[in-house]
Image 1 (cartoon, rainbow, N blue to C red):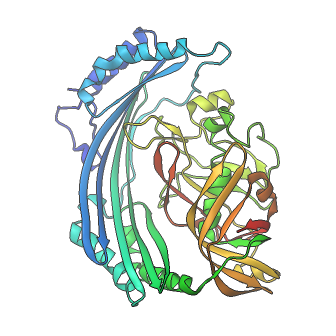
Image 2 (tube, rainbow, N blue to C red):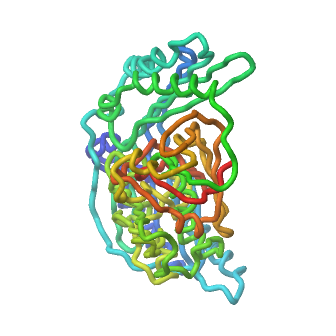
Image 3 (cartoon, one colour):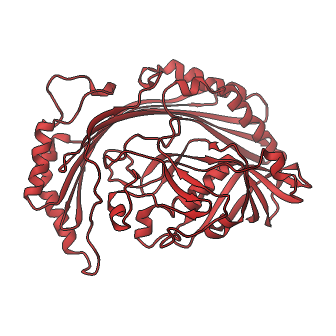
Length: 480
């Protein structure tokens, strides 16, 4: 068996190993003997729980555990990849995966360079981010009681026609063995609860949603006023029923930290992913060291922000994570990268390799991405000299064309700004523009930068992320 059978501490509780080193290491050495330059096996064991309420009644409660592993072999400058939940079968797949890599290499255009990996420190260790209240010790009654707090406050009006509450938590145990001698084991946890409140008045139907949680255990939700979360969603949904349609055209936009985060994630974070740059699908290609935005704009991506939903201690290539400073005072300083793209662009590997689970290969991904704070004291100071504009709050998502450099995001609710004051509530607010233009039009940031609500990012694979920042003011934004 490749899953270890000898006596050891229980790896499901953050200690010990699942992979049998005595069998995996010789298998990786066999790959080198067959002509590979590099081989790795990465395993992920996910222990998960999800639950949901619909209108106060239990709709689902699903515990689960999945173990998957991905074998990656680099031969002749190309990858061969084999993924399986049958961990015991993986040593028998070494030779066929080497052949696959060589077959891929033989079809590469002669003008294209093969894959090379940047050097990284070879580390053997275990690193476990422990929590004060382990998610695996939460019982279903606790989950239901906490979602019930949200529902009770969210449902307190006859115009509320639906309240849906969800819960998810997970313990993630990772192991990585490589032909270079890397032998790393790490684990951490995430927790999140969410709600969507739907209201109706005659023919008008609106919804408002909210999420809270992050990297950590039950202590994160213990510290959250879940009743207030439900109450805020109810009040926002009811306000949207009477809100006016948003004006359209170019005007000053002020974004709350949710929308600031979505903007920086979509408009800047994705174009900064070095695999997209390498594929010629980024408006930031060739712009390292150039000024691309306002001097007010400094942007980081930081998987070490504990509590952020995109936090993780080690990336999926075994590289220690670190704070990545992407923009400093408007100047593009770095790309998010993994070992392959770090070599291509002659950069230091910065721990940006992430995969959805043990059955997917790593891609370059964001973690916790945010704009740093500026010099304005608060919202009042930010809007006091705006004659006419929009204050937009809460995210309904966004999208980006990384190659063209265009983006769009939508707000959940908004207010009209008139003569320096918030006046009418608005709905159906969206903002679009060109990344390199809007970055230069940021002319105000409050001081209090922080992560906003947890989220997810899709790029062929889905991973948890955090984003946020301060309140942000953009002049001449295209609002519609």
